[in-house]
Length: 107
Length: 119
Image (cartoon, rainbow over all chains, first blue to last red; front, side, top):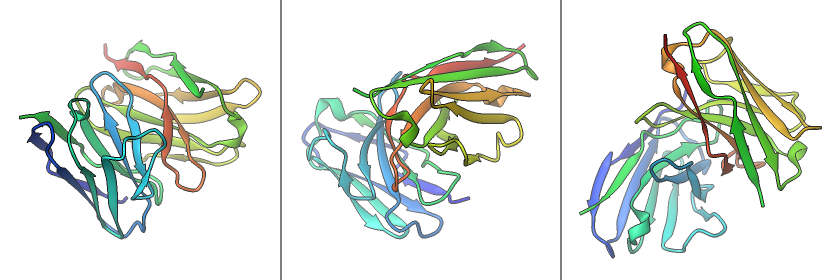
């Protein structure tokens, strides 16, 4: 199975900050990498697919990059509604594994 | 508007069985693969199973292989997960999700249904 490792596991930041979360795959997954946002008690929401494509309706302050094994999710200017947990997921091959999550908290 | 509505969760004893359902609307159900993803309390997301649009192809996580069966009824726009030989570590919120063709990501999710395995 492909292992997905996110860093950091948690992060404290302020409104207006630029934040970057990284995700590393245990083997090359091309650009089959997706990012989800999850708020407490809610279902995950797709933010970025195919490593860098913005899902319809997602604000442009979210962006993704990378290919192969190393990927990043960047939020250019944090808004209050962005404080949540973020997961990466590889969709290259089953089992479609997720990273362990990055909890973004208010500083 | 795409809607996915799970049902069937509840409390079940270890070794017991449960069938989850996911009623879909707002899209041509038979055209899309579907998946189940679960989340144990306070933990991360775990992909469980996927099924092709026709139902002819299925995949499972090793943790549920041989115990869970995914299926679909395209005439009823409904996805199912039959769960047998349930264990305590199957306790989780189970989400159904619509799969994007080609990218295999999950663009729409249901609200989830809680399965608790306990005596």
